[in-house]
Length: 428
Ligand SMILES: C[S@@+](CC[C@H](N)C(=O)[O-])C[C@H]1O[C@@H](n2cnc3c(N)ncnc32)[C@H](O)[C@@H]1O
Image (cartoon, rainbow, N blue to C red):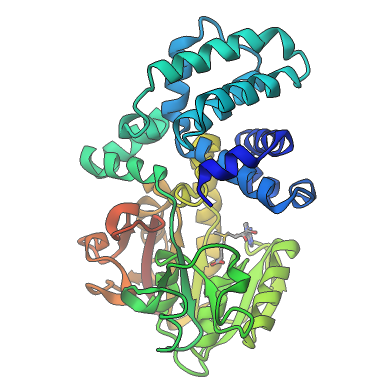
């Protein structure tokens, strides 16, 4: 079924659900995730649910250009809810290519159903008809990311990289998986492509739970970049490994699958439930601990410690385009301060000659390069253990001169999550 078929068949409940999803996504961190798992969405017919999701995601992926086009046609901004309705209408017209008469009338109707909405019916109609007559450019990389983030990326990575990165938000990302153990019989039924390091990029669409090998626990969903940090620890059978900030557990599973005796710590009991479920499905085992890592009183030292710290998550915008619009400049120093405390806590748990991998799915240097630089200045017992070209499946372009990794979303053909990764060794 094409998106146009889905659209034409979808009714007002689907559009109303898309409006709630968009509202949730843009009002708070993780709002999109919460909205997508909300029971209200689950109660819709499958076709309506698929359309609501597709419409909200299409809007978020082109929010910058859509807003620029709307602003050019609005003398003064209408109430927030009507702005959201207009954004959805524009995405139907311009991205999903819904026939204009259907998109305009459904959007005017949606506006009329909002509290205080009826007076804005004429405005919604006029703005959307204007967009139909003169469709704006929707793929301009200079508009796809918020200006403040684009400016940071230009200054950190250069103008060409910043434009390439912004351009990737418009593309629907593929699903990558990590195999529990190497297998030749899964690529064909999953219509998958081999990626460096052993991840597979799956060609199938739809519910992952229905894909071959899922129920048997032979793989888990994990972006190609997210699979690199645990590989760099290169744990051996029987070594002890600590995964700090572990949930939902992709890296815990990798360490356990490699034969390590893993302790997985996270402060969120709710998110740790997913670690336990993932362990049960894959038949792997780990000690699962609910604790704030900065206050964890356990005194054990480990052969290998992985810290995948909480961060602005700006590197995940291909899967979560909402992060671009809910992240704020004020978050970055706050998160950097937390990362610094977590890094000190992680360091205390590394045995002499043990390894420490620090990573964040952030594109902001304060959470990556600067974080590790400051850590090495205060923790003299640690030195960088330079990552070698191609090690762990990391794209070659991501290797920095000092042997840390700055993976940018366009470093892998078809895209990948942005990550910063450093490996360190404790001398004493
Ligand atoms: C980037 S996610 C980790 C993803 C995980 N490593 C994986 O690969 O599936 C960050 C995690 O840090 C946890 N977290 C945040 N602050 C924490 C703290 N002070 N102590 C322990 N965990 C914390 C969050 O609950 C969240 O699950």
